[in-house]
Image (cartoon, rainbow, N blue to C red):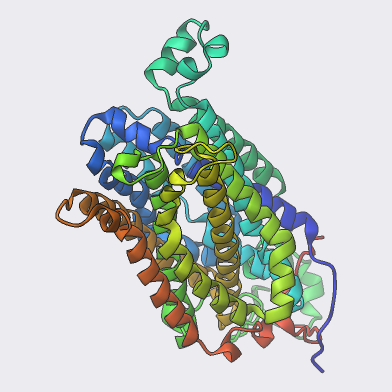
Length: 523
């Protein structure tokens, strides 16, 4: 009889997965505080067109991930999760080091593309978490899945801080980096290499940790690794003494030669070759529906993430806030801290109160109005501060951090919710890699076009002088609000019965039989 059980989460393996996940958001977000300044240093465009080139650099990562994400997922279904994860970390290390050496727009574009091409880890990591928790209760799965965005939040604190405070180290910190001889000359020539190098070093530590401690979670791959080959069993039988075989009636023996004729079963059960489900079998209507919704949410999220550094770094005359890289890094670090608090405290409480699907729809609705009002933060320059002075950043900081906190909470809930809903909709455990790879491709496709759309709209609206200034500086935010409304509309078309709980294969533990695959416990 089927029964639901409660047992502790495999904390040790979840901690190792978190360690492998932790370094990647550092390498991803480290460029955000200085990417606008880097493009300026390339001297390829006037200030009003900077956003276009920034959008191309940030979108190329998602574009190349779109091309390879589903292939990495399907490869992990065949050879296992562990080798794919380790290879992805190697690709991240190589790409971020090359990006730090960028002296031209083309070099930066290609090195950033390399990261997306060689790394499909996020989808594979989701599959590992799902496999580790496939016989746990729904609230335990939610806790486990929330660890991945939790690690992203932690990494997004460190990454922007590194990028904001360590770019141009010789110029900004001459007492430390100004008298180091060749090293000072190198850092002056490549002012963005130091934060990229430190990010790569942290990623190397994660790679070493995963190399020694990360265990395989794909059950079929683990089963193959612990079973002796069939040929070895046959050799053992054939190596027995012939005198014993003569008296063993199961084998037919040639009376002249003494050779043993072994008859093998035409329907072997233990040694069948594992064939993962096809992509067509994995992509049920429920899976496709939630992946499309996830894709459009990823579009609005990356659009906002791209717009934030452009908007804050641009001068006030060009519709921005006129913030420095250090200030942008501090704001992004604050956002990362809010992510941590959201995952630990806010998400569990709201999920218990509203349910995952309803909460997902509520935060998408809130984001529509948040996006539409974001552009009005610049008007807070004209509000007197506590000393009665105008044109100070006091109220600008208050407004920026308040809206940034609300945005971060909503994005955290939405990303975690999408991850759980995608895995809940997966029809078979053997399809997890393909389904998560497909969902990642949907998100990557939108992330590929999002930054380019954002940069193009920002630059085009500022250049359209026939439009009144107060309108054109808000066009990019109004377009974002429109995307947010469409995403909310898609979420209302999802059937909660298909997503609110995991399929029976993941929540119900059957009585073991002799045909069950042996599993290695991870505690």
